[in-house]
Image (cartoon, rainbow, N blue to C red; front, side, top):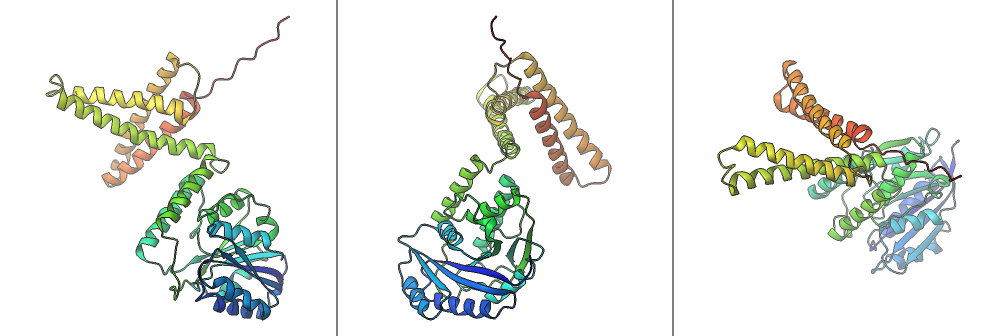
Length: 372
């Protein structure tokens, strides 16, 4: 791809009456003067604002012939506004940023220079000018997307991204809330596209109210994440790993609860803690076997003695790996708590791999020969 390009630049906006005019003026000036842009359009997607955002933006259409204003009749959500902007774009590339003036549109040039080598260029806030709670939420959100979908980018929700239009308009996007940015990047990554990340300035909000930290916005994003994870975006391996780890937590609770019951509620085990631990450990393994068999790996065949034997063999191997790894790492001079983390990880990996490929491996269905 050779510069200059044609560009559709759009702003999702909700109740930004104090910012929208300034945003449009700045955008028109920057893209109009850019040597990297030969043709452009500016789109404002008003997502059901209840203030004068739509009226102010609409009045400016008579001043800027490249400006279009599109309005949702009611607030449909950030993701819906992004999908509208993407759908309405007509130029070779699509760029979007928020209408809250927390990004300097002049830094669009820093993304444009990479378009000769990348079809997708995204910004990351450096540093991020948000309250502590929003920073914590963002870290947790990035971690969840990395665990569930393997998405590894610095700043998923940074509203400073440019895409080749033919790539992004072909995506079937389902999210209407804050999950939209992650969904776009996950699907582009799975198309094998390289994504360039560029640092951009993040400015304090001067006017208007942020809505990203509202509980209903967060819960909606989590619902959309779980829906996508349960659908085509959640790979089988990722789902199994998360379920396997969840079963591990459940089994630990079963073990502890059973031990407390035996030592506190029965006379026989009150003075025999080792015996109580043996039975509580056994209860935990039974829980592990059943949950992993039916939930994690989806086995539906009848349980066989051979399968039970493979399961307890795997339990023994994983226990040996845990203890052996711990001993080796401590002998190498590693701090015991650090060694414990690595030994637990090695044991988990061993247990999961053997469970998936050996213990709970689906048996091939018998092929019925037609009757003569």
